[in-house]
Amino acid sequence: MAINNQVQLITYPDSLGGDLKTLHHVLDRHFPDVFKGGLHILPPFPSSGDRGFAPLTYLEIEPAFGTWEDMRKLGEDYDILVDLMVNHISQKSEYFQDFLRHGRASKYADLFITLDKLWADGDPVQSDIDKMFLRRPLPYSAFTIEDTGQEERVWTTFGKTDPSEQIDFDVKSEAVKSLLREFFENFKRQNVKIVRLDAVGYIAKKLGTGCFFVEPEIYEFLDWIMELAESLDIELLPEVHSHYSIQYKLAERGYWIYDFILPYRVLDTLVNRSSGALLEYLKNRPAKQFTMLDCHDGIPVKPDLDGLIDTGDARRLVDTCLERGSNLSLIVSDDHKDADGFDVHQIRCSYYSVLNSDDDAYLAARAIQFFTPGIPQVYYVGLLAGENDTENVEKTGEGREINRHNFTLEEIEQSVEKEVVQRLLDLIRFRNEYGAFNGDFEALSSADDEVRLRWTKDKLFCELFVDLKTGESVIDYFNEESGIARYRI
Image 1 (spheres, rainbow, N blue to C red):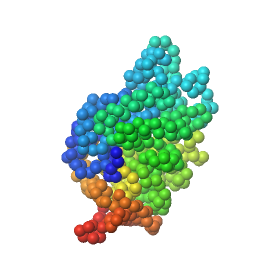
Image 2: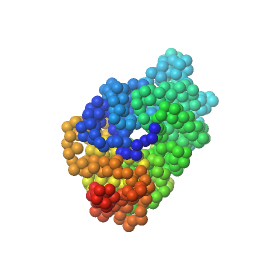
Image 3: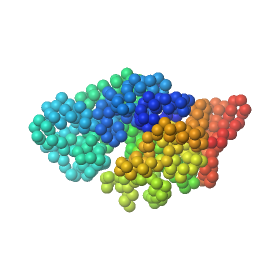
Image 4: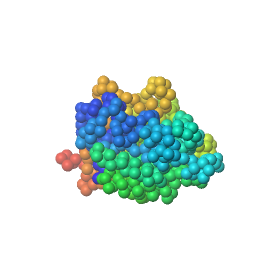
């Protein structure tokens, strides 16, 4: 299938009204002509943690969110994108629970990476671990097997608890490939059109490497899973947070990638009122990307922009974000921090709040995003111009909750009435409908305090002008009825 070159919505299944049925109602009532690119529904599956990213299975929908019938009905009106945490599954899953009972005698034992699959005697070697890109202090967790009382250590890339809640799959195992095939076949039955391969960069474990984006193993796996997806007419979106050059390797091989550079570049442009770095970036990036400004995690910094930003400038921008209420996710591995100790992984905030709740600046940011080649995604908090939810951060102790507010129906009604939201909806409609966005893109030479971006297709054209001094944005475009027209965003 071809992915629609129109705007997508990103939302949790319960964040716009409480469940999937209500989500459908909200879309029908408030946004019936808006998200023609589809819906990215963050994990709706039964999960034991990490807001859905520690799934027990992909064969069921969490009952609190609804049913597969609800998903299929949404799929009748929208192209549905869901996540597959291809690197791991919950320790509460039936697969790992059976392993905890029976150990190596479990029928699911080969799904997981016991340490003897890497070190012959099963004992980890610290010098090997020191080379790895760690997401927690140790890349494995210890569990006691019920039948034998013996300890088993298995690979766990992610997780804040010890032992981890997220257990890594052994993607070299035929048992894992069979299980992934079962998940994909179910997605096909349920009208899912796009699958995001979450954490796919971590799937290959190889001693002597960082155990992240290990070549050629990563390509061998991606080629295998791409063939599977294509056989079911499902599109794939690999999710890789890493140095941009790694992303570009995937783009060269024809894969969709995420533009994790754009959110920082746009923020930097609007805060510092300087467009040079943004325009240079837009002239050289691959076009086959999904774009975003905000998401359920944060604005990427390291390692996504390593080599692209000056640490001093980045510190000053981060300080501005902190002054505006943001919090930070930091790099764990010392080897992946900058020489001067700069260690910001992500800036966590509402994008509206980090732009000082300035309507014009926020609409300028969205206009730049929508004019950037790729499939634009708008996160549900950004859709409603939501602000930092510091209360939920304090209540949960989870910094990412700053941008994960669950909106009640009453809050949605109030938010939709805001002028900034209505202006954003008008801008989304323009991006969805104007034909030049299927043509040729050009980042035009501009003064440092301006942004000029242009699309042309046959006699159609549209040109975005952002005045960084005032934050105001206009689009000049060809209207077949009246000729040259101006749209003030």
